[in-house]
Amino acid sequence: MRSFPGAVRKRLAGLRDRVKGRIDRLREERIVQRCEADLRTMPARTLAVLLPFPGHLKFVADTLAEVRAKGVTLHCFTDEAFILELRRSLGTDHVYPYRLCPRLRYRVILTPATHIPFKKYKNPGSVVVHLPHSMVSLHTIFPADTFLGFDHVLCCGPHHVREITAIFKHSGQRGQAWETGYEVIDRLGREVGGRSGHRRPCILIAPTWGPSSLLYRFGRDLVDRLTPHYDVILRPHKWKMEEIAGMLDDLRRDHTGNQGFAIDLDADPKPSMEAADLMISDHSGAAFEFALGCLRPVVFIDGPRKNAHINWREVLDEEGIEVIGRTRIGTVVKDLDEAENTIRSLLADPGSAEQKGRKAREEILFNYGRCAPVAAERLLEILGTPPANATHGGGTARYI
Picture 1 (cartoon, rainbow, N blue to C red):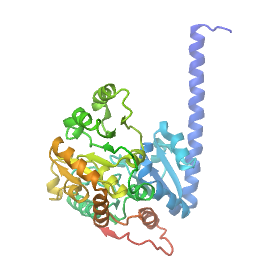
Picture 2: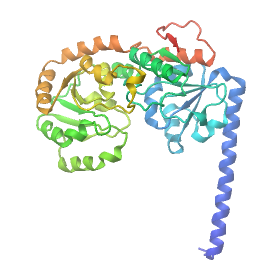
Picture 3: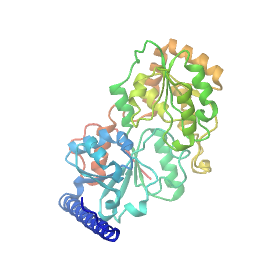
């Protein structure tokens, strides 16, 4: 093989990088032109979707399928690292790098994500629609400015309507709250539901993130108490995972060879929820998905509140559903001793949790089983193409 002097190799590498850069720019220009053509020919039938991570797809997947079935073209934007994965998941090549979105003038942008840089993505005349990625409260869990910039919020339940109304009113921003639902719970109810069928009871530990998490307070002690009697799955919250990496390593080492213990870091919670007979949580929104979707018992170990908005009572003097809603879907205990006793009694009577979950589902969730078609109809209205012969109902708008 011929060897080139160092200076020549350097020049060749620079030339290769310039050629690659030019090819990338030409490719991006073709993408922009393609998207612009869609926007020119069918502006009311083109929806931009911001999905920062592949995990965000599960919050809107059914809704996007409904929208596509009604003739809407989706332009999805994500981090470059996830483009191929999302193209496979969505079954479309209309998935592009984030940085191209600001160059295009979309009428409507949909996202389940928070902390969106609105000044970058929002053009004059465009609106941004938020479909929440959890049942948790909007006015306590999230920082004060999280929802300022959203024009429409597709609310999971009545608490979200009260909360976003108060947030918009407190900030002086106009917006709309739509009674919609939560497709994650719909999907769990459709695909999981009932009992797990395990011979040995399986317990899913699903804590929230941060210092208030039961993982910080009880972590290894809780796992050590449960593993002699139950199969245990620990599913830590993905947010700030680096803070608990050492603890997870310790647990893996302590339980090496224990087939009844697993740490689940998968983006999709469904397999763990399907396997579990009972969940242990604190203030996590995952507990509402499990209780209302799978209709199985939840034990909440009480602890400090998780409030990112320190002045939340100035916005709405109402505790978040992740606090006051716990007794409606599960049982709250004060320590590990009480938790152990409660676990035994709940596992002995799974029917009571099913009954409790069905009742709560009717009270705190909009449009159970119909979230995706309702959300799709609302999106068509926002796009400016009202759905013909809408039959799903339940999508009332609250003007704020």
